[in-house]
Length: 345
Image (cartoon, rainbow, N blue to C red):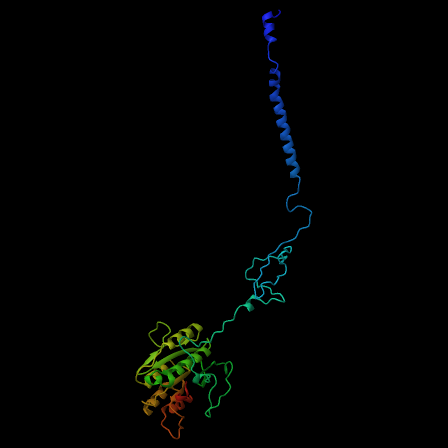
């Protein structure tokens, strides 16, 4: 069947651009795919480069140099470049995280510790206790001869027994009691300060296996309690007890009146090896009957060393035979020492 002449005329009337419009999408698709292939090819080529750290070129470790600015700010630290020169960091093969490791010093640079200013501090004996000039020559470990000279101090222990000393009187013993006059007259010529300073020095020389107690007295005895204890007792000479004692000694102030015997009786009841007894009071004296009673109470168990603070030159026993401090020491196996308070500064 053949087409009619009208249909043939219609087909022949189609525009000439219609075939080109049909081919245009196909051409765009081809160009787009070509561009994508080119992009992937470039990306794959860049990925063929070795990552950082896996190349064959030479590498080196880099460290950090800390420069300390001193008197010469233009000095060059090794590994540091001047202005205009190529900067190169110093190399350090070892890095440590140990903060406690000491800093190594080079031959031309001293350790950091030596660069810091050294503060000089004056030594202290204890809180509130400064050694007077007049007592600076008194070494509690150097007993004074009767002629005024000094014997060399003993070292260590004698016969296995620890040593102890106070105001030049030296002895051996584990249990030590200090009986110190704290009456009003001790304020004269800085006597109380000298006694407290010497007491602190003696305590510091005690060893930890020794025991001590301090009794201050005026009209009545007063125990230097280091703990909350209601009766007198000896304390081990540990650093803690020494520190507590120094603090309490600093707060002691002289009172009024003088009664020697009650303080000595309190000390003897503790049965110590040694008693150091210091006073400046010849009045009131310890009467002969009281001296005898103290001797019987002691029973030769405790040695009593007497230290007298007097005014002026020492008077010999032949001139003053009634000195009760000499008798007290002689009857109880101890020694006697005299100090002129006018020489205290």
